[in-house]
Image 1: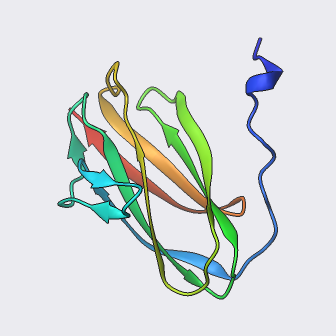
Image 2 (image 1 turned 120 degrees about the vertical axis):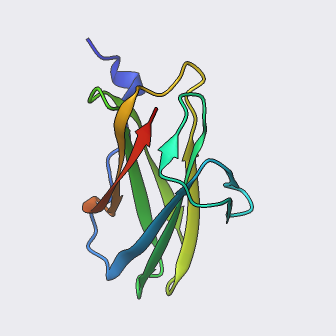
Length: 125
C-alpha cells in the first residue's frame, strides 16, 4: 500500500491561456541556468534526460507538470514547476536514473495546470 505522506500535492487545475509550443530533449543541460545541450532523441541507460519546454500565453502564473513514464509503464517521477511570467517562456527540466532507464520507449507527459498538452517520447538503448 502506498504511503499517504508520499502522495503528490493536489494539482492546480485553474484554466489558463497558455500552451506548449515546442519541446526539445538533450542529454546535457542545466535546470538552474535554463540551458540545453545538443538535441537528442536516443539516450543511454545512464544518461540524464533534459527537456526544454517552450510555453507561450497570457497567463502570468501557471504550473508545468511533468510525468515521466518508463518503457515498462512505471511512473518514474511526477512533479510540477511553477512559472510566474506571461509570454514566451523557456523552462528546462530533467530526470536522471542512477540505476538506469528501462530500455525502449520512455515518455514525458506535459501538462499546464492539469491539462495534458503534449507527450514526448524518447528511446533508451
